[in-house]
Image 1 (tube, rainbow, N blue to C red):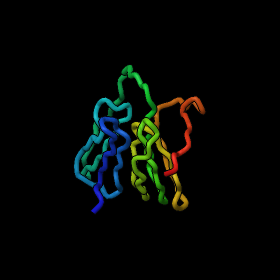
Image 2: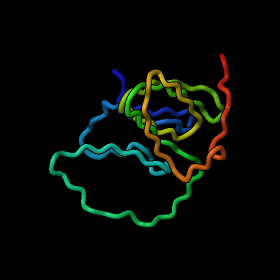
Image 3: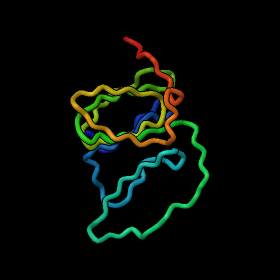
Image 4: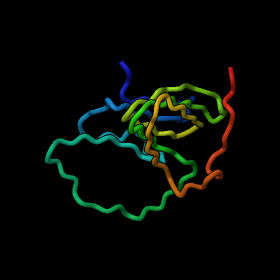
Amino acid sequence: MEPTVETIVDGLEPIALIVRASFDEPGLHFLTPPSFSQQVAVMRHPKGKCIAPHVHNLVSRQVLYTQEVIWIRKGRVKVSLFNSHRKLLCSPVLNANDLILLCGGGHSFEMLEETTMVEVKQGPYAGENDKTRFEEAKS
């Protein structure tokens, strides 16, 4: 049986966090450490549960690296995950309603069928200055 939450690391370097569509635990689950610039939580609350109205306070944060959250709305996509030395680590397949936090290293995507993805990351997007492209080493 496939795990519902997968953490991919290379040594001490976090690479990705995958939350499968089948993750459905009751309550609030923060799946990322406080040190991450993107926080991922999954919430399942019973009918009638209320979250009090609130605003978020102005808090200064320093972001050094872009972290991306990708939600697969529909379709299937192979995500190749690389460490910071551009070495391929693994290539998990994500299905509809799976989510991945890309938190380190590098990555590429191959659509295995028509796919709709939603991406959330820190902004503003810096265009080509935001990334360094590289060729995947052939084995």
